[in-house]
Image (cartoon, rainbow, N blue to C red; front, side):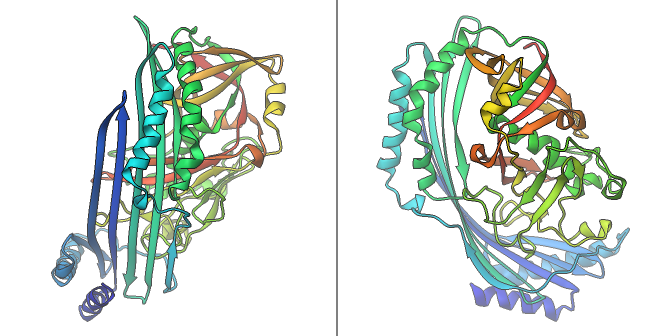
Length: 478
């Protein structure tokens, strides 16, 4: 493989291209699913190929192939595309500089999930199903797990040759309870850049019974009240709040309008780097961290992105003030910066785009009890059910699975169904007056973030501790 790739790089050089790179990816996946005690999915998949990007006189050409023996033809196709693009070029592309690197990296795992026998995996899922089935009133039971291994090689005409191997493992269980007029669900699970140990660490069978009981209780519960309430939002919901109202609007390509026709734009502008945009309160510090410095590795963890730029930890919001964009090599020069290492592609057949890594809300110094103690009447909110946000990422609405009543600083034990909160991004983050400490921190994996045309699905993570927000608007279901 190394010889084939280096021969293709030499071919690019012989064409007198300004720059060229090759991303080879060999991706294996496995998924197992059980529904109501029956296996509904037992599938594996493998995708293998290379994407080649070439720049000629400020114009870019891209071509991809699943046949590694046709790299020379694919190089010529990418080069010809760059030449054709140059005739219609409005503005020459500029790539931020980077140093050539020869390196390798592999996700730290204890157990390769692909080596664990299928029978053992099914036994675990069936144990979850059996626990959920013990609860009277449950109408539907789901349990699933999935794995992925990416073997990636990046090489370019600058002299880089980087090999990386990533593992991700995840599982979830869902209990649904239906009445004549309503269906409620409780969900539990996660997905990390890790081995099979991540699955065992979830302790799914131990959680299944209580999860099912709560689903049944929710189906009989009252709807969450309307009005303005103080909320403590747990990481299982807060991750999506960070993702949608901070992650996407700080992607520089989106800010510059490249996603406007499809996924929308952003209320943030390049001028906000120097104008002092107040994004939230002093309790809100959010970083984009692709490094493997966290104990649990988020799905956005790597050593080098798909442009050969090292993983970085970038501050996006510092004590409420906007400080930085997520960037890649082709847009960082617009704001007179170098790439922050966020040029990532879905598979080998797509170009790198600016994609989220691990977008994390940094911990504060509260305990969970300390956050609750400051609430006279409000709710503790968990687990996303649905969401919507406008195309500039200003106005949003999130529906969650459960709201736990807080009265006089303590949880009462009463639960409400269909909690829905709404707001405006900077006002919402401005209402945050406390974040729990690192002790309460969780990282949640997002394996299905979509962006681009053609659509690319990327994997990212979000770490946070519970946080408190004042006078958040709660609205009625339906």
